Amino acid sequence: MTHKPQIKIPATYMRGGTSKGVFFNLNDLPEAAQAPGEARDKLLLRVIGSPDPYAKHTDGMGGATSSTSKTVILAKSDRPDHDVDYLFGQVAIDKAFVDWSGNCGNLTAAVGSFAIASGLVDGSRIPDNGTAVVRIWQKNIEKSIVAHVPIADGQVQETGDFELDGVTFPAAEVKIEFISPVDPSEAMFPTGNLVDELEVPGIGTFKATMINAGIPTIFLNAADIGYTGTELQEAINEDPAALERFETIRAHGAIRMGLIEKVEEAAARQHTPKVAFVAPSADYTASSGKAIAADDIDLNVRALSMGKLHHAMMGTAAVAIGTAAAIPGTLVNLAAGGGERESVTFGHPSGTLRVGAAACEQNGNWIVEKVVMSRSARILMEGWVRIPGDAY
Image 1 (cartoon, rainbow, N blue to C red):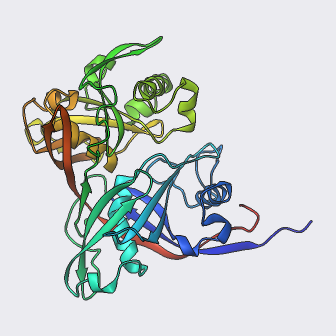
Image 2: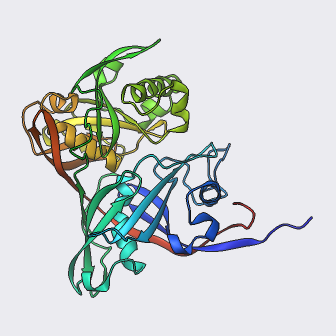
């Protein structure tokens, strides 16, 4: 029996924020995978090593967590005032499924660096020293993002002393601006309410803020679901019954947000919406052993991604947190103490994160011009990734 040999595809393995992913230049993909569809999905599944019933990704580049089972495809943008098109694929671990329904805010921090290193940004926009402003078109959600990438001697500066909780070593700071995360023509609150009563059959009825900013997110009060808001991963992820409850809540919230029509459809939309729970600030010990003082944060937030409690915070969920915190009356805003605010510092399982957002109300609709946060990124490995020639 003859088997096709492996093929090799140029790729770069990068950390962006608290995530890792395999980055591709669109033109480097095999022709069949340069367009959306089955061939592309199969190729990315094989690159990551999914589906894996062992949940280890031993035979692929994935890390068997939602934060490390990610892929990115970049291309030079033909849109006015944009440098690069950014497409994100969240690869399921135990299913043959790539979710294209949302962005990855953490990997956004690496997009500008990869785009510059890959020649996707016009050289005239890259200073010899200083900061390169990379204009990104996020294709999944059709939004603009601006990355401020530090440059030294004409090259991306990756090393530095910026510390990001959830990342072991310091690196150079990359400021990210999510421009108009909610278009004025879109409904930031799909139900029309800042707070809803979300009825979940068999579980209960909960107050919920359901917002579409950065990524569709369902916020709950921690106390309403039996938590303090200071939980670490093991408190949730080692409790199968809790995970099942959260998934049921997520599915019914997705229906209320108009993202799906039936509960069963949630399984094919694992990346969105997210579920998060909030609580007033309180002392706790982060997963690194670092003591987090209540006085140093405005509130605590815990969020689930791809069915598990995230080890830190998804960048897109941080956009939702910052936006909701800036709007008086949301559960996030109330947990932070209420009132008007332009920034919020929240505690997550790995430490803290500050995110800024400016919101205003116009004709009864809430408008957010941009949400800003700082992350870091660096190349971990570059070269080629190999997969069997018949994998796609």
